[in-house]
Amino acid sequence: MKTSLSIGEYLIQRLYAHGVRHVFGIPGDYVLGFYDLLSRSKLRLINTCDEQGAGFAADAYARVRGLGAVCVTYCVGGLKVANTTAEAFAEKSPVVVISGAPGMKEREKNPLLHHKVREFDTQKKVFEQLTIASTVLSDPQTAFQEIDRVLHTALRFKRPVYIELPRDLVSVPGIPHHKPPEIHERSDPKTLRAALAEAKEMINGARQPVILADVEVHRFGLQDQLLKLVNQTNIPVAATVLGKSVIGEQHRAYLGIYEGAMGRDEVRQYVEDSDCVIMLGAFMTDINLGVYTARLDPARSIYATSEKFSIRYHVYEDVRFKDFMRGLLGLRLRRRTAGKRPRPTPINGFQIKNKGATLTVKRLFERLNVYLAADTVVVADVGDALFGAIDLFIRQRTEFLGPAYYASMGFAVPASIGAQMANPKLRPLVLVGDGAFQMTGMELATAARYRLNPVVVNNCGYGTERHMQDGPYNDVWPWHYSRLPEILGKGRGWVVETEEQLNRALLEAGRWTESFCLLDVRLPPLDRSPALERLAARLAKRI
Ligand SMILES: Cc1ncc(C[n+]2csc(CCOP(=O)(O)OP(=O)(O)O)c2C)c(N)n1
Ligand SMILES: [Mg+2]
Image (cartoon, rainbow, N blue to C red; front, side):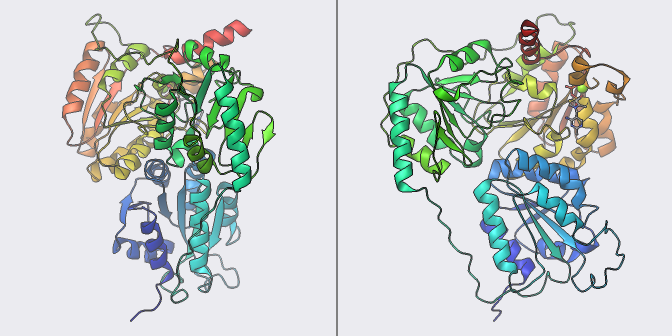
């Protein structure tokens, strides 16, 4: 009987144990041995058109499922996922980057093997900057422990990690009878008690407490706790853009997106008038803060994340974010009456105003709001796709994905593949500018290959940039997007120029679930979403 797994087998086993079922990537000779193992394992390999597509797909997979994996070959593949790994790092998404590499024996005397950049560890050094932990599995004696350490760190910090697997070690056995350690990290009980006592006093003493929920509530799977807290206390809750859909957006205590001047004004006012803002898992990025138009005062805030915990100006060490969230539920906080607060706008049907009228961005989003269903996951790319999506009402929690901080174009189409693989019950609605689409939109081929069926709405030119500074560099070659299905031999396409055409295309796309649907929505180049409009108006007032 075999007493020890090989290093490759152990890595696969641990990924599976942590809930990974799909691995995204493109093979190459340095990773073929591991690909062979993968293809015979319980994990499913998903081949994308480009490594960047695999990276974004794995990121979205991690956001939906808790852990994602991308597997690529040395440097030519690895360096292509540098950008997607950077996004995963910045936006806290635990992606395991697995890269094949030259065997340790081949490396002796530093020969010029193909794909090498400068030294054999050049790629590893790059990824040290982009991940929270990294390792080269070069020693069978420590390989299993290294896999345990790196995967644990990914899950502990919700950030990407890097595992390099030299090709001559894939089938080498690790140490026999190895068991992954069980690690339970807890807060310091006394500090936690003191922090909860101070939080209780501040929240119960407040005239108008409000919760501001953000990305870490998603990443640590604390949506249930948040919902319980809101139901128990009736304290209203706003979300940030990065945290959007942390709670179903039709919940009666949901205020809307708080994003300084970019969010709705009544939400901004309510949050900024609060004498106790309970910030849960929030990262105060410039986009979350509405490009620094937000007014949040630390003296009136409780700030709880996995990295920092403070109440007013008191900083507490050793208080775990999860423990604090659970602790809040046990505090028996005072229940609030609803009073005057912003409410989610009810979603009314969509009436076509004028059959031949040119479609505007505002009307596009109003119609999309009606299209959304409980099984739609909205995946927004950078640009007005993301800004406009702020005003969509997501039906169920965790059904909105957008790179709202690192903001790398090209996320949405491949991310929709990852999201649908992570949860096949969801049908993605992808909102993507034509600029971003031309970067990674051909991953629709991957959607076709694996029978996925996203609905892709594509809007002309680098619109967002045009509002900052215009020039010919903001123009994009106008593809016949709606005819891509002909090239791919799958899918359906529509050209949409009027409200009526939009209506019809969305109705047909909703019914046609066999493959992907691509709506080429032609919008006036200088038109913009209400969110961008609001920001411009507020900024103009300050000048
Ligand atoms: C990878 C990458 N390159 C460049 C940018 C800078 N950038 C931000 S928005 C934008 C234009 C986006 O155009 P499009 O995708 O058509 O969306 P629109 O602004 O028209 O809604 C650009 C070039 C970026 N965010 N990411
Ligand atoms: Mg555009």
